[in-house]
Image 1 (cartoon, rainbow over the protein chains, first blue to last red):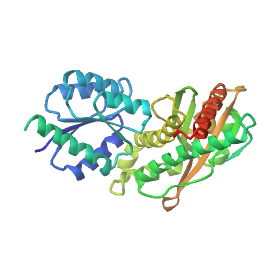
Image 2: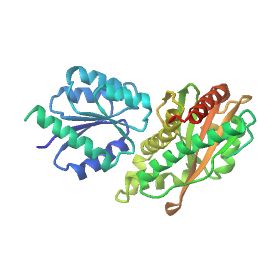
Image 3: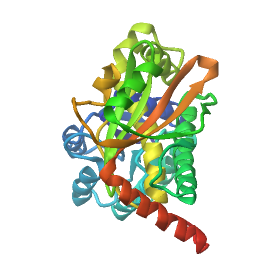
Image 4: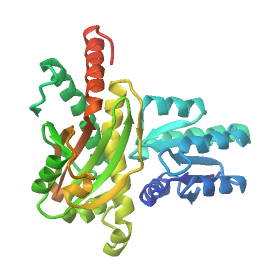
Length: 127
Length: 211
């Protein structure tokens, strides 16, 4: 079943690189992009997003603040924080919000297991 | 590491070299992952300089114009991390990351934002390794892309007397004719804190714990 993935990153290059990887790993899935947290929350409220990939270091509202807000309405949505800032404290905060942490630069091999796990989790929730 | 830095003892300098090597190694691996090529690194240089002198050094090393991606970091110690390379390398670096399939005008349109993201990934690789090894939290600013002289890039104000720890490592990608360097500029009030952190790092190694 095709999933709809939302990628949130203030960098256009980063979004392009994710789109490139997604086109190899899951060409049938839909991909929606947002450049900041406000756009992202509006898209998530729209209702048809299945999986979220979010950058940490963004202007105004960072990825973990966004994730905290997202969790209030979507406690089980599969989310990965994708960041170059893999400090232990930030990885721990990500896990505490029940999200995966994936280090930049993103590669096919590092995104693949997350997407597979997310797909499985969604199948179990809505068989 | 070459250093004229008397405040640190020999074992402390060794430890700092090791920490910096691990950090820069991770930064280089991230660059290599992004472009799919091997990245060569030099031995780190550590100097104690005023920003004025450091800016002059940057100008001497980069004969044409310089491009820098800079991120400020704050925490137990504070400073500035920079990725620097000659302006003539800038488009080649972006092309190496986005791949050959993109037209030149598209690469030019993407250049500024792409450099910020590439710098962010590389500099975070270095700073995160250092932060995790020393078990401290650093807050990193968003990346900024600056062009111009060393003085512009280091935001030198006239008559600034305070020396700073200036740490540089050259990198090059021979197959693509890209070269540049990573620099860390650390404010002097942070140095005593850094020394204490290094001593704690050494103590954990001596006790046989994993750092």
